[in-house]
Length: 635
View 1 (cartoon, rainbow, N blue to C red):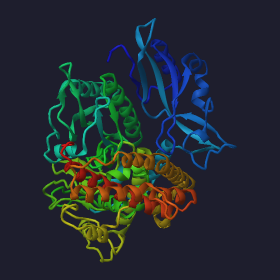
View 2 (cartoon, helix red, strand yellow):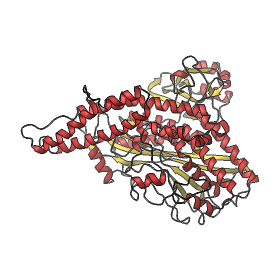
View 3 (cartoon, helix red, strand yellow):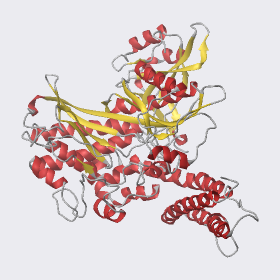
View 4 (cartoon, rainbow, N blue to C red):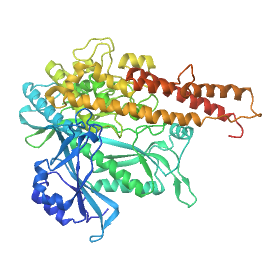
């Protein structure tokens, strides 16, 4: 980090004159990249020489100066091979970051070569079709609707302290917590060893050491340089104790870390998260580590989440912020009517939110019982309003401080580091709006709304569905059976296809997202089509080949010294191997049946067979480990 480098250009300093001055004052910045976000959350990176940018800077601001091939990014069904032109339009309302290449130094300035990354919207056939546009347009719509709603209903239960005539703006605050795994190259660890460390809680909040500590500290510092205002970095639950290598340094590193930074408005928060992933990966790479942001990099061990905090406040003409979720009396009520409506909106409509939160095989691998990742559509508020509490087993929990009304917010625990935060947050706020409208227009008191949220399954409600329960102060992993959870809170999807069926089967809830035409139906359909294409491609070309490797690694270990137990367990192993991966003239293996179902477009069957395959592969690994443990030479 250097004080002489320009790390970012704050929103508000993007006029042509100011921009030209800054860039000419920093000749080490040699490129400009227009950054659009496709529907899968991928960011574009087109290198434009700075001289060309400065020459046509006015044209860049007007739009149309840069275009890309939309058929090469995830705009499935929108930008096609015969209609692929997509224009990139500058977004001047957010910070612009400078990406430095520390492997390439400018000879004249002796500084790393920089690329100014300018956030942009993607425009196809005159309409914005990208993830950033979905979030931007959705937030504009939700803001307008909330202001109108409060003007029409000036007496809202729990917001008696708010003068609606003084409202100047609505502020959406978002904060994300980024978890990730770090390891030294070529380092591997047995799942049993990682699992034992996790169960014995040997890593969580433990002291980082050696080069990993240096990398973590440097990452926190560089996030500060970019204006993200980091708040904390620490070890997470997963990982191993590092060991000393041949050089005398800590060389055997496999651990899970988390870095948090300050919340901000919804769009800037999503942009910040993208920039944070880039910076963290580069800093750790420079220190000799590999970083993965996968949700579940190691099956059987804690995955990585990105808990997302959501808040809504009214900005008054005086400049004061009033948290719309916080009630007038924080010790008498959990939430205001707006707050109760917001959480009810998320829970009622989560079947159409979840596809945008968890759209990959990797994301759904993390959402399994036993790893603190949410598997049920349920919330927790606490036992009494006077005592703030946290239940880490629910989907969306209330976070509050009875001494600080501005702290009241919801923590949604399902997102992961590769969740497309732009579209996920948009879907959450649009769903919140649906619940807020229902709660406020009902005229019900905070106590009546709390009763609605707390109703048992089978009890009719004015807004929430009769057959479901939505609140629990219990540990939903330990205190309910699978059958009880599924009955009370709904059965969670097991595959990408099952998750996308939430959109196919709930037209009324999709209408909540498309209201106002901010998140258009064609964009939702394009997202689903892209997710399903990636699901089937990964299933056939990556997951099945990976499972084939697991089968091949399970081979006979016993010889004449073996006994009847070895023979019996090896037969179990081999029977599973054959069932999974070996065809005969009479029967097809499970792998082949999955390939056939995908080829035929029978995704329902492919999904069911994937669930069976996952279970069989885990069974194979368990039985083979049992077999190995009885082989003396291996022990």
